[in-house]
Image 1 (tube, rainbow, N blue to C red):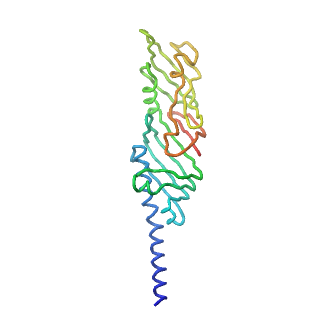
Image 2 (cartoon, rainbow, N blue to C red):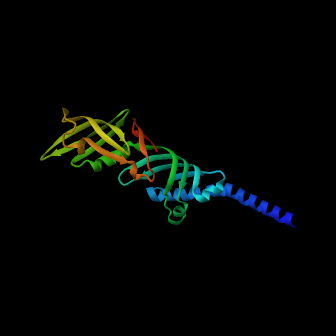
Image 3 (tube, rainbow, N blue to C red):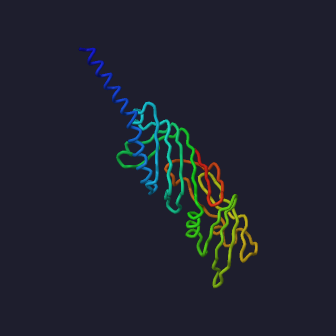
Length: 228
């Protein structure tokens, strides 16, 4: 009799363990996706969680969390693509399941990539730089060109800037190296720094602490490597 009870208990445990290995990661994947969708206002986001054994996920502990999202909306700038890999990570599972809010308690390691498209930067710059109309942003290998028409009193002048997108700890900024007004070279701080230097994105808008590791300007897009 005792042997049957022990055998039954073992089989039950193995059955529950097998089910947890199969279904628990899927269930938490969807919870994490819901939390991220709520934070960023996009449904186009996927998450994959891993832990061995899977039952440790019930404590909010994961060996690996992988995230991939598209058209992620921040306060002012749309991120075309966002990917991230978290290692040895703990999240607040209670808040995730109850409030659909993703809160990281601890992160052992983190690497990610943010991709910004030319048209999204163009929309942001057009709203950010006051007094300049017909703004056009062009991303070329290694440089970002900005052109437009600047109103100075009753007159309007054509401006053209060549510059770089740089990372400064948590901030991603644009700074003009060269500024032309009606094709004449002038000081880069002509019209004030708001014209020739401005913030594009702050990583503090993300739900995890991160710093800028590298910024690469390519044809039509910017690739930003971030890490903890």
